[in-house]
Image (cartoon, rainbow, N blue to C red; front, top):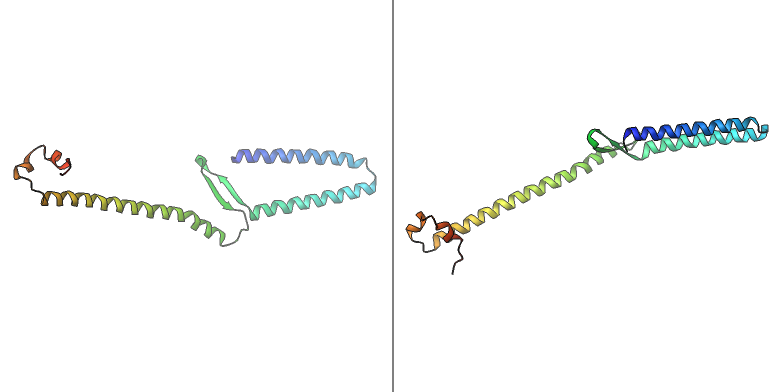
Length: 149
């Protein structure tokens, strides 16, 4: 969800809440005083619970924020544990480090296999009985590619 979608959803909820509050206020005028007192007390309790739930959601839950270009970032709400951001950074950097290490190992393995292949060709050339004229022959590469008998 984008920020504008979230803002639109919040404004819809706020409008709904205002309409419900207005209807309750209208109905409260026609109620007896003892019921009016109980309703006012229940309304105050509900508002207090809503504030507590909203504050708890901001403190404890991670928030996904959409940035420019559709990139999502994960951050803790206000009042999160002090070491939590450090662990999130480490957790984000760890896959990158593992990927870089894997790429370095693959590069080293490919270099070694190329060196081994070149050494195998060189040793085959030096140990095989090849006439000296074959080195200057244009078909010498084909001779190297042919299977040995």
